[in-house]
Image (spheres, rainbow, N blue to C red):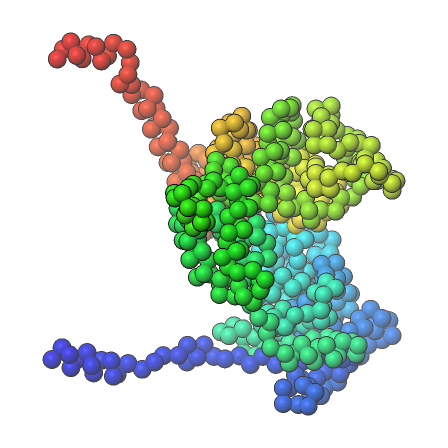
Length: 604
């Protein structure tokens, strides 16, 4: 009976397809050459068919301002629908946003006017009253730019405004195409380039994939603007298959294979050559090895990587047999290896970090934070830095004697910076990584003193988004260096100092705001609002009335107010429990107090 029910149940199961529930959205691809629009058509002889001519009245002045007819293309969809314009560079994003707003009809200012003013007010609140002059001009038209020069809070606010339709047009870089769910009715590619590089097929598909998202829109279309000289390359771009996907393990050994091996041995997943080789055989790289590295076998790559880690002092080889064959050896992680593994330090820099910390101990400058900041400035960011030498010299000339000592310990002299600033030839070789790293440590040092990303951004002529990324990277690296030092007893002196520095870098605000920012949902702007309203501690927030918070704090929803109060209560409860445990431990009688043991024996 049971078998019959089971068989009939199986027979009645009908396969369910998601297509029944999520309607398909057709994506139409177009190319624009001069004022003509062509539809991408794989069946056509040259891959495209004529669609229409743009019908938009341009004066001679406007033609010079907008030679690509961007305004004509965007006004066909905004403000009722959303539009993304992908630009090759960050600066181009800002210029295009301003250009579009200069030509747009003043009618666009009336569309959701109050909500757009609310966006501007919120941007000021999160930036201590500062507002980008470009956004100030473009947001009233429902337009904004989106690139890495924005702070994370600015990006979040603008993305929310775009998602709700308050903003209808983003000019953006290719980074928005990956990982940010901001669909549009129309996607326009300003040029078939990312920076100076011609588009790859997968980049093109990623960008146009923002148009017409299933469940969010009924239709989607993309328009790629191109010049006649790029026509042939673009036709190849739209017709060729996607690029192959390859393992990245081989590209940077220190971040790939060697880091993987250190983790395998550190976690004791595999500790001998045979097990490590077996593990590698099952990776994506192992499958593709003959394609990626034809000149070496997987066995040779494995042996070479283990030899490198051993020579670098991160691994030690243990002989478990008198045989000289490689597979007769097992490996264990050294103290330096464990410190690098626990601190997740890039293996390209672990020995440099060890050397820098060791040298730092010989003349650690504690009169200012600059020395500690220099030691925790990320190495990888230094390689991407391009100092403004006049600003560098200006900052250098303002150093105190203690801070000058830090620069001298790093090996950078004021004379060198002056020569660079004045364009003089320099005979003596100086490590570029050290010079750049010291410059970035000046930025971080200024940031900790001023706690204002905007003013530091202006002082060093850097995008505020870059300054914020530097701060985030330094806070993360400081935490990594702390874990690195915890594994090495010789660096005990750094531990307490790094705990405090990590906190300062993480919050980068005035000390009185730090307790408030421990509460879920409270960032710097909100912490300032709460502090100014009289909520100066966790106790104040834990005992706050959510209804009073809503009336007191601008743009605070009831849900957010309740979350702040409940989070503060939970934090306060955890701190009270920790203090109680500490008090009980202090009052507890130690078993090894002299005389206690003797008297208990006598009683027995």
